[in-house]
Image 1 (cartoon, helix red, strand yellow):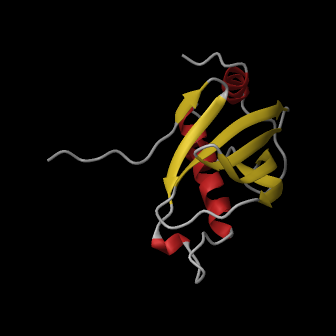
Image 2: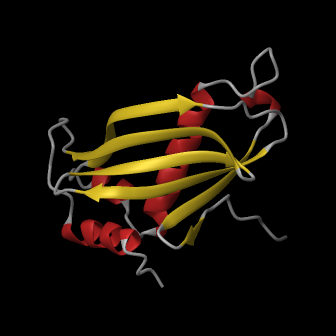
Length: 150
């Protein structure tokens, strides 16, 4: 039996692209995507980006080193996504610091911008304090930002 792979993203220049489809469970009574689902889609795209950059956040958590957490986010809703729409989440890293990075994410349907977010993600210890990101993780983000991925 052939088993399907879970959904995954692709790199396009210095962007990570992650596809989602609007399912019935994603919509509210008016038939449009419930606003909180954009946050879920953005989170899934960022998690997939980490996986593709070979950043093993689970291993870091299990080793007691820490994890990434959103420390701030600004989200704009521009147009509604509707049942069965194919939506692509575009993610770019706009700034890389010692313990955090700033990102920009867009939800698009074809060429139409539906929603966008600017956010800061910080690397924190298990007790919630900021911590310097591992050097190899910063290098992976730097390569992504500079479009040096193979």
